[in-house]
Image 1 (cartoon, rainbow, N blue to C red):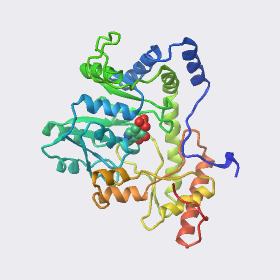
Image 2 (cartoon, protein in one colour):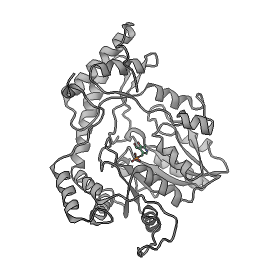
Image 3 (cartoon, rainbow, N blue to C red):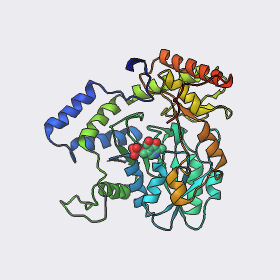
Image 4 (cartoon, helix red, strand yellow):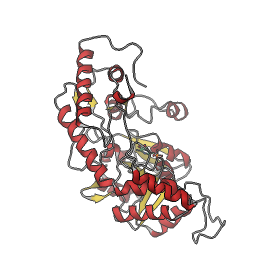
Length: 385
Ligand SMILES: Cc1ncc(COP(=O)(O)O)c(C=O)c1O
């Protein structure tokens, strides 16, 4: 099979504008702590309508800084979702605190506010909200819970770039929200992230934390707190500037691809298309559910044999080997989360996927499910990662 026939899971849009802006930075010789990072931050603040945006080296780095700034530390508990990328919980461990996983809603896959409230103990200090697969969590209900119990909130909007709840942009709800810009995201800087906040004091603290704890007045080599090197370079920011310029187009293109998938998946027996509820989804992945009787790994093997990339996505955080070995988590703790995690399958999804390619994926998935149900042997040696 030629490389042309293989449909990858994700592929960023990189064009002349990205090359031009990166080249400008390289020619300027100001590769870090330069004006393009400031420009990138300003573009985000303007777009989302926050007073501030702090660029950082990754979504993980941004989340870690927000928890650190909230004073989370050893002995504390932070409630979050296990149906997320492992970084959501790792950042809690980095602070010395303990992640406590709340069950998710079976439709939105985001934390169920009632489960969050039930998980609160005297040690709970914060809620780390996750907007998984770009669908916003129940942000107002979670804010209400946090207010009543005196908890901080940090929002992991890494998968919900430019997302909103009831039309209000994530990042403008009074707590910091973080986007991640890894290459499979709606917008990429290769690696990178941004923290959005309206809080002037938090902004100064985050600028310092991401830059080795430098003093708030920016004095040269004066470090007023323990910080990190979580800076985004101007080279990465240059890619980001070009990407924000085309973000509306990229978001629309993703929504169009998702629409093609949703239409066709409605006709594929054994598949539940992605949930479409009252909120707008910022389309990050296309990951429908397979019926519980289907062997997902075998179906992935059949798709890959046809040159179609697919992955089991997302694994539960609490069932990751490290979380089981070092933190004693076990299967059965979170039945709803575990059932979702066992059945969702990520299919190729990116802006430039064509309608014909979506057809090819859906036809191949339909055939794979029918072959599975008919008990036909799958490709030898193929299977899920
Ligand atoms: C939900 C979620 N949180 C956090 C992260 C971490 O972001 P990064 O890879 O930029 O560190 C990701 C990245 O995929 C993510 O999907």
